Length: 141
Image (tube, rainbow, N blue to C red):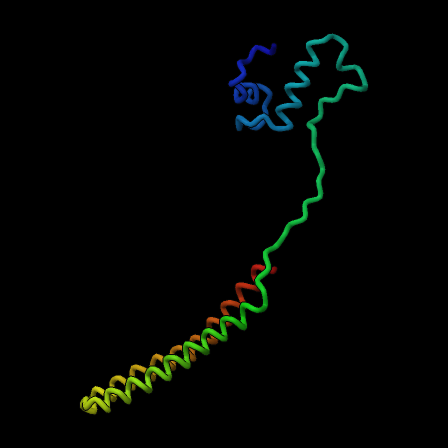
């Protein structure tokens, strides 16, 4: 009725100086409505005819994800278990290399590697727990 094809929304928007996005949003619908109403003489003068975009107001409640506090304790528990396992495994492994007749350099190397692994776990435990707390703080903010 207005001289545009149904798929020519962008041209209609450009002709009416609207945002040319191809989306028939509230402003485009209002412009279409205004043009169609203007085709009927005297119709725009009626108080019941409105051309303004239809805007529905809704209260939006944003749900924020929450990281449970129990995550901290789970991380600590798992890091502690890993530390114990590495410590026990390193001690048993070092003892077994000694019992099985390995030379002292091998026993010392095996024990040293176990000790370094245990120290890394103990040192990284604090960083891992701190990282989890930081992530929880950012998520809950």
